Image: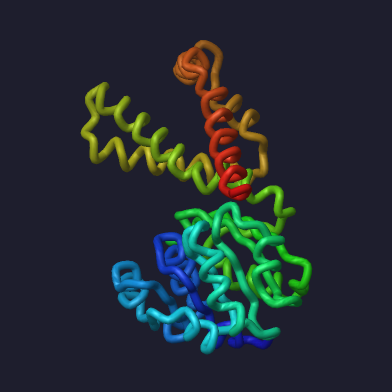
Length: 274
């Protein structure tokens, strides 16, 4: 793609909830897409306000999004999506690239409800896309071309890490990263409360807990080391860390987190079967 062409891409969102805005905001922060080239639709103004505040165009008409945009992100609730697809299908052309963000709705279902030959992809982002630190998995449908995937990756790369994977990984990604953000917030809350218990002011404890998580994650990404290796490097014989880790093991932290990922993944699979 020619330099600057991506900035002229016409990007539409059908559904304007938190995740849609997170993805749009990631694009805007990087300057890859101009706000005037983003159009979002929703039944009411309640969710459109955030898009308007960012300088994006908004509408209550889903078909208007199809008429004006090439890249269409489907960001509705999963149970609403079939009705939306039925509405927009007659307006979908070979020029459109349809990107579903709906949990549990398979590529096969999307392709069955859209015209034959429609270029369809699925993505599963997470909330930190709003600060350009998200994690996104994408999977391509049978008619999506290599250039469609490459362009989608360019659109999404400002939002954070973007990896292509088999569709079967999407439910796992939901359990690991989509829902995993909440697990991390709970752990951060517990870290800070432990510090408060020992006498540190809450505001300071929250800030240090957040920075600790950020730093640990950055080391993982930049070194590529297995977390067990990094954890071991922090432990000294008879030191504070190994004593603390012993308490975490007694509380079954590792097994509990694994069970949480499994539970969220299984729930995502159930939603897909519905």
